[in-house]
Amino acid sequence: MSTPPIEKPPRERGAYSEAARQRLIESRLTPNAISLTGFLLCAVAAVLVWQDHLFWGGLAFVVGSVCDTLDGRYSRMSGKGTQFGAFLDSTLDRIEEGIVLTAVAAVFAKDGDDFAAAAVVVAVLASLMVSYTRARAEALGVECKVGIANRAVRVVILSIGILFADLDALAPAVYVLAGLGTITVLQRIFHVRGELKRAEQPAASGDLQM
Image 1 (cartoon, helix red, strand yellow):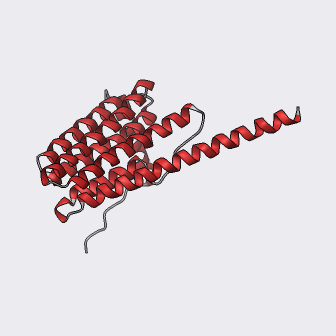
Image 2: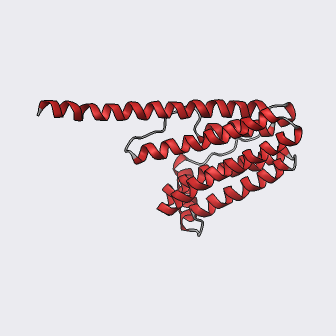
Image 3: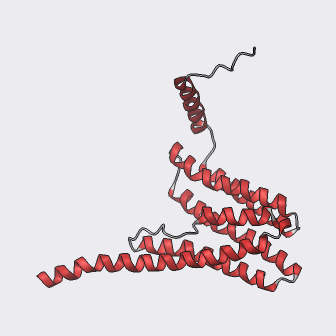
């Protein structure tokens, strides 16, 4: 009979995990380096998609997008985050999504699919507006994370479309992106409108009582 593998006690596993975490924090790795790595991978993905290597482009986009999720977590965990780093991360996120979608539009243009190419333009505009509405709302003091198509959702949809382009999934993925992005922009507009109205009501009632 083969003996079952001996599992390390939870405390020992936790100690190893904490030691690895501490080594990572003490290393020269910075959140900005992770952000730039994700950007470079997405740039590679855009070139691969443009050259019709869609599956490999999809993989590069997935890995680059994973880096985008890790940089924020690492920033909080390590305490190495800066205000410029947060600004750089948000800026690169918009560029990455834009260049990959631009490459997708080029694929549709080469195939003569004008409708799908136009849908890419709508998807890019909606993506930018989703980000802008949140930034503008927060400048007004309103938290605005509502909506069905945040960046993570959009990345998943676009990744599936690129990876399974050989199964004709790319155009439907773009249509879904354009539709959900537009709906999300509208959700945020109505959300901010409602929050600002609620904030104005106590002030108005206070003026009446004076």
